Amino acid sequence: MNRIDRILELDVIDEDATEKEQEDLKNYFEEYWHTADLFEVKAWFDNTITGALTSSKYYFGYIDEYPEKDGVVMSFAVTEYSYMAHWLLSFGDKIKIIKSLELSKIMKDEVRKLAGIYLDHE
Image 1 (cartoon, rainbow, N blue to C red):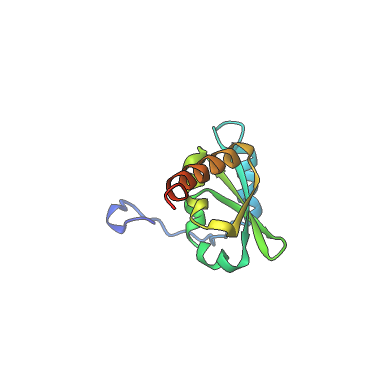
Image 2 (image 1 turned 90 degrees about the vertical axis):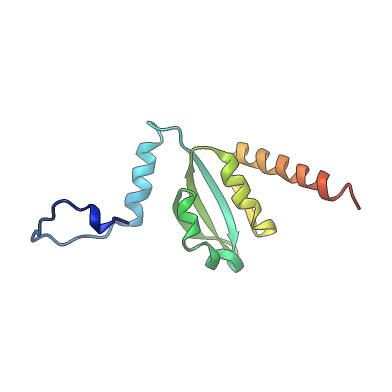
């Protein structure tokens, strides 16, 4: 979003704006992987929570998605796993990590920490 009070100059041109295709974003990231420290994450989300992801997924590097078994598989480009792990943990058993062994390890460690806090005091 741009603030209108910061626009210094505006030219009206005869070209129509075109919307980027989802495939354009995917191609961009495929080229960008090699020049940046980005990691690909794929996670399956249950259909019962996909409605809640409409805007938040973009904050976590959303690239694309496709339907699979009562849910959606989404791809993300992330610079580090910890932030993503905490976001994914907020969905409980409604997600599954498909790609990123490192993220899976972090998720398991976080679940163990939580179990140690909450299950040891029963």
